[in-house]
Image (tube, rainbow, N blue to C red):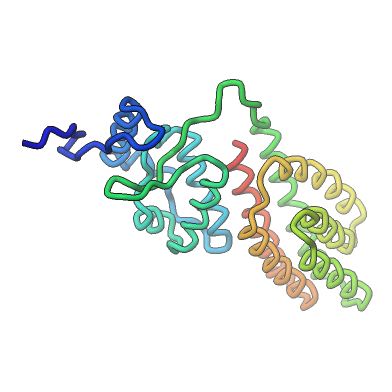
Length: 269
């Protein structure tokens, strides 16, 4: 006779692993059972992401699952195949997302028959509070308005050798920047673009909102996958501007802003 404890539906409970008490293991099993039994709780969050910012938005979605407690501490996230299908991303992209969450100490991967990706304990009660949601949203929306507008205006300007030289130089500086200096060079690239749009007032407003944006970016980790994606968008943006394609420039800028916004909302809100 098999006397091993079972969860709902007859599923064997996971035996306590290293560092887990019997109570913790039982709680993890209960949480996993609950997550498996009530997948509809995740439906409002685990929606397909947009192709232009798949990594960033997939990361935002799973961060929301964790921070909203839709899968509680000790609970198991849905299997990789299911997560990838629900988010509309490849399993390669999903694994990069899960690796970031592991590096940040938010989830852990366990192998074996009862393995999977499990949510780790929540931050202690004394942890520093996050930024005000309304202030974050204000910065993100104003930034998008200004960057998208600057991209369109810059593309509509008359071709100029000096403008091309400055844009290509700022782009090259971001491409060659070491990781520790990337955000500074990224800031200079966007300030250059705003400065070339033909509106000194817009450029001044962008400098102010960028300072607020950088304060938020300093609170989240630098993610190599995100930086690679941003660099491709920078290249596309410069190409659209120099070709005089205002619609394409605005669309690239909009996608670029959306990717950053997804990361900031996921980590901070």
